[in-house]
Image (cartoon, rainbow, N blue to C red; front, side, top):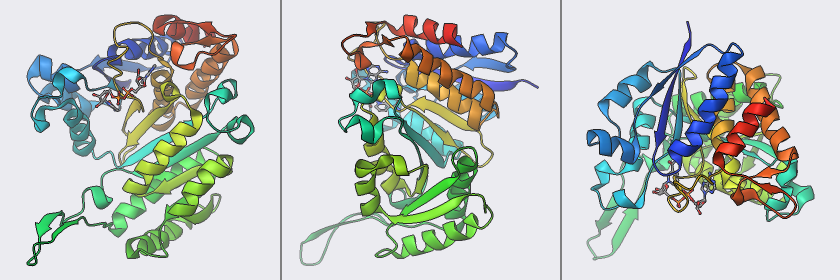
Length: 356
Ligand code: NAD
């Protein structure tokens, strides 16, 4: 049976970049990839068409799909809507409805773009890290939470950092499974010297690691991990960590590469079904101009093939094609530098298809 991919272009540059990713999928289909594409609305586009950022039709399609390809959501025209109707609610909604607890954020720096990083090229060229961030638990969701006024009139803000053993176990397993498809090294990041939650985290990750004897497991405190990420980032293969630490470390890691238009991401559930999207937003400042970089979205398709559709060879083909196009010197304006050729969104997409 063919795999079902739900395509959600979203807002801003979303439709432009997703169109290029769809070209790549269509090219692979001609070579025998057995997938069916369906399209839905989300974010501002969902609100415009159906009055809510996650329309019921879209959610129904999402539940049926093996994988979802998302462009981006958001735009200034939606900023004055009530919170529950804002585009971002569409994303949060789909993540929680499908229980997408494992957020994969690669930080890959193509050697051709080493100059785009603020770090020295020899520190980052060829960088290839995968940060696995727990996405549906931890301090962002823990109860109780709030701001209260104490008897003496002093106000107090509080949140709760909590993880259950099953929550830790499933994110750890997700990280080990991913490591098995990579360099087989997992670094678990915690704060076990101070936090009891982290003590439990470390114990459970270690136990899960026993099921993966081929994978080398190490542990690192989060403050050291932040330091190591900017000092010698190439030492890492897979890093696994809780929601808040992952939020911070994955942004730092993304910026090591210097090019937001190049980075894909995935959010997976326990069955390996997932949503794939570029890490950048809807870039309203350049929407409609045909200049957005489609490569992060195209590389999201590669992640989809690897992690949800079990087609690692097709994934590798896409990644190699992107490398070839960069070798040819083609650059969208965001990654352009002296001596390379500036191209638009569609020309970049066509070049990747040709390089496949
Ligand atoms: P952004 O990522 O959209 O843009 C930041 C900067 O990077 C802009 O200058 C933009 O032009 C540039 N940029 C982003 N993607 C690019 C690409 N593919 N090619 C070339 N340049 C690119 O972040 P922002 O400006 O803070 O947010 C804009 C909107 O996107 C907001 O409504 C925000 O809420 C939303 N947003 C959505 C997501 C998502 O859908 N997952 C993520 C972040 C922000």
